Image (cartoon, rainbow, N blue to C red; front, side, top):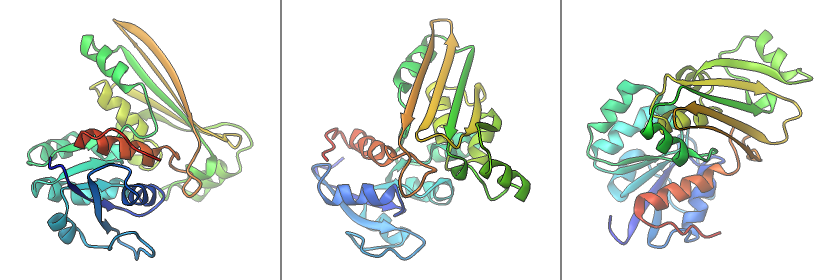
Length: 263
């Protein structure tokens, strides 16, 4: 990668706005943000709003901050053009056929760990010997878990819950499909252990959940691991954690060999 790298950000919502503003302020030395790609009008952006075609012309790297649909719609085009891509919506990569198509293109892709940690340890243990079981239990505020596909009765049950309510139990692939903005963590864990079918997910709506809580448990031949992450939800979008844009910036820094993200 050149010493001077041009970056465009896809999506200017709660994640993309922070990423773009930090890059504009010089968070990564030698990295210049040159464009914002968004389906809606973007007021007061630090750099011009451009379409994807223009972004590919002027950018070395594109950073996805817009959700799984943006990955499905644009990743092949970006990688096929030889540009690099940072993905924040890991759930989009739960489809093995889609991932295989992406790998056939010349551009590099790196997925951020987002709101979860400990993945290096899980990856190392998995390399030593496959895990016997891996579970991810996520607890969030009820309002952030209501989905467009739910019936009115399901939505109402979640919204009026007075105590913790299990909303979903199943595999990581199905979890990412049904809750695309809430369970990217499960896909990130699945990638770490190299087995998307092994990871089981439980999603809980809790009206008392002031923090978004992820509990990861993995058991295998080389050890048993249990760790808990509690993140503040984004004030703009409670479906995501406030830490996510900073994880995106760090992943971009890793891709470019520049690790020092400043405040």
